[in-house]
Image 1 (cartoon, rainbow, N blue to C red):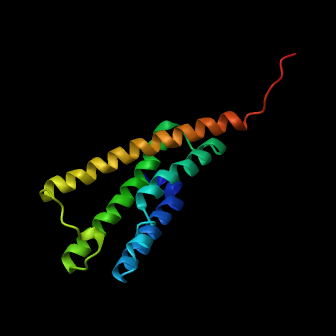
Image 2: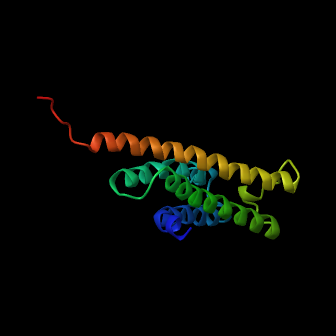
Length: 145
């Protein structure tokens, strides 16, 4: 797993910065119009493009490595949101993270597991498409004689 954490390191740092930036801004009472623009979901759908470019340029492995690397930063992002949610609920901070779920705690946690799986699959598809398109564009054309 260390290999995949190493590949995903820049994305893990970026995801952490996004969560650590939005949470204090919400605590400080910054307008929701501003904080809603710091969206982890948007970021998670942009990161596989950069990862796909890396897979196209470097020899990082195949589809399995791509999926596991996407899993690492998707899991990390959802895990950080779960921590922010727990802090908000326990401390009663009043950010959007602490909005009470409309379901039981078990169903809420199961929802996070499903979210990780769905995000991993979607980001892996985006990553694969980016890598395939970039590999095709990076290869020099050969002319038929």
